[in-house]
Amino acid sequence: MRTLNISFANEEDKKEFVMECERDFENRLTVASEKVIKSGKKNILLSGPTCSGKTTTANKIIDDFVKDGKKITVISFDDFFKERLDERKVEESEKIDYDSVEVMDLELLRECVSNIKPGSIFKVPAFDFVSQKRKGFTEHRIEKDDILIFEGIQAVYPEITSLFGTDYTGIFINVNEDVLLNGIFFSRDEIRFIRRIVRDRKFRGASPDFTYFLWQTVRENEDKNIFPNKNICKVQIDSFMGYELFLMKKYVLETLKEVKKDGLYFKEAEKLKEKFEKLDEISYDYIPANSLYTEFLGKKN
Image 1 (cartoon, rainbow, N blue to C red):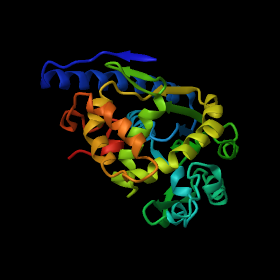
Image 2 (cartoon, rainbow, N blue to C red; image 1 turned 180 degrees about the vertical axis):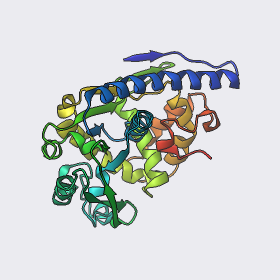
Image 3 (cartoon, rainbow, N blue to C red; image 1 turned 135 degrees about the horizontal axis):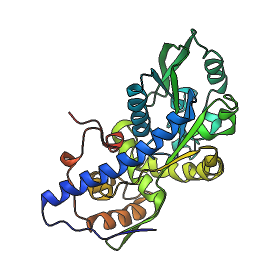
Image 4 (cartoon, helix red, strand yellow; image 1 turned 30 degrees about the vertical axis):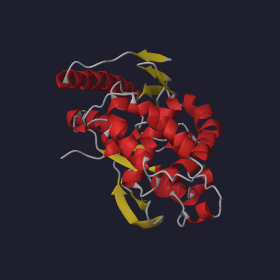
């Protein structure tokens, strides 16, 4: 468990702490990127449980490969979801396992991967989470020395890795430790849940009750399909940021206000609110534009 006792004398203290955390995380990503480049593989499978920071990691690797003179294409496994998965089933008390392999269109993915050859053109779908429909397809052309990054929690599923044989290198990113912050306990899973409940409300039109509703199924899938397979990834990264719980205070409290008072998750939400009410707050203004946290709070102008 990571134990942190952090206090701030003023706003400058907060800014300095943010930048210190950012530098530490940048160093972790640089070490990971160097390992990936050294592997010499053209296909990179980037995985991690929900809200672990996969997009930021992908962007860092992209930057480093570009500096090395390589062309990069990023493909999200989320775009290979089957259509017509909607919230209708929530009203029927049926849980949809959005993170399981069963919700993926494996035939479409297999067709895409089989067409990835130097000089060939392959199509990648674009999936809209609000409508739960495909918006269309994007064509990509790959040449001999181009690099492909396949990003998503599904990247460690055996059904996915088998499509690539041994022609890939794996990266796994996660919050690796529980945290005791100023005497307040946050589990590693709770930290990712905090990221997700804010992100889902902001970018996927999901109510906090819906995110709570899905969370048990999400965690069951992680324990069944993700964590047992994480060791296929030779590169492992811890995505926890020392300032993040201070930063998320404002957004978590805003989101939890919307939890239904007569619903199943109100008491649980109240306990989480109590934790955050005890913490100091760090402004999003202090966060760099390329921070991990733009994944969950949005890009900065």
